[in-house]
Image 1 (cartoon, rainbow, N blue to C red):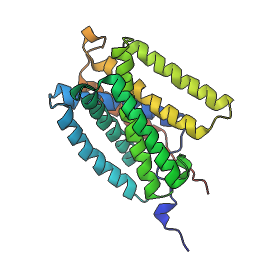
Image 2: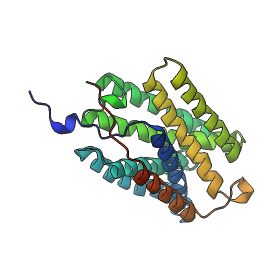
Image 3: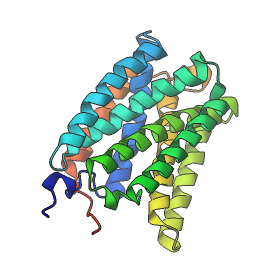
Length: 252
């Protein structure tokens, strides 16, 4: 029986250094854009989450229904998960009063549950095995949980634990460097390391974004939310146009 074309074509990018650089930019954009809408525009976390949820559902539908890898749709979907993750985390932690520790714990449980169900339903959580719309839906749900967790974790470390944004950025950078060292020097599962890196790039972007746009009194640089978001989006586009990204190779 012939396999349908859309079930065997990878629509996620190959994991390279440029992938991780763009990912960090995207997570930082998510923080500054989320703050722009919910705080600077004074819309609030709940309404902002609803707005970003509509955007996310729109772009993720385009991504899942696309027949081939489209770099612009893919990164638009990543940004949608980061902005939605920012406002959901802030709403959970602050408006619902769960707190950063409680929010981080809850989101970690949801993330692990998503990976567990995905693994048992499809057989693998590797991006090299995303060969069906079902696997791709699990992929995006897991990413959304990881982006939301990253926001809560970044705020927890920087604010509640009092490390500040700059120190927290160094801490999360050190974690990512450690993951890279393990990747190149050990036989630890590359799938496990991919998801570890994916998760920890988010709090790095969160604290960098907060460092750029938070008031001076809170340890930030007090840069314009709109200005820094526009600059980061421009830099992302430059990277996307300058470095060709290929679809990940699928395992058969």
